[in-house]
Length: 109
Ligand SMILES: [Zn+2]
Image 1: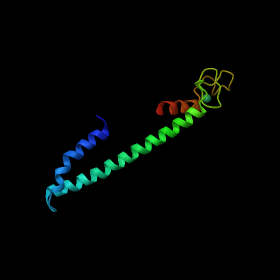
Image 2: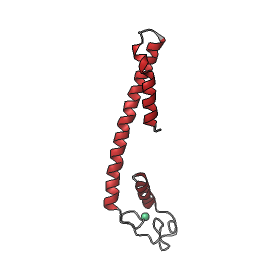
Image 3: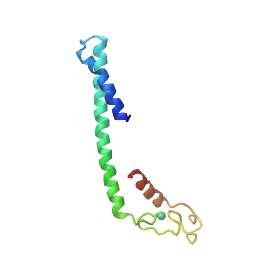
Image 4: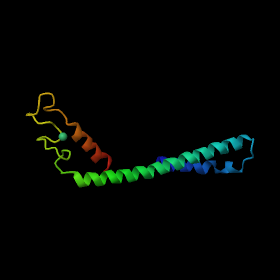
């Protein structure tokens, strides 16, 4: 069960509260239920926005990725690792640009 499914289940459970009279405890619960519904709508809206953003990021990845395990513009002998002939402070260490690119690939699968 996804988070959205769980929230929708909760929404169904609180619906009887909509017949509550103002000033009663049930009415207070109704106000809480209405706030919950607003939060659910916001989460659903953010989920749609996230889906669109991931699709956009995936399109950029597919357009620019060179398929060699390195970020665009990089050509490390070992993908994502600075070559031994680089300066000693970075030689053999992970390239942060390539790490970022790998994260883009991972989150847009
Ligand atoms: Zn790199």
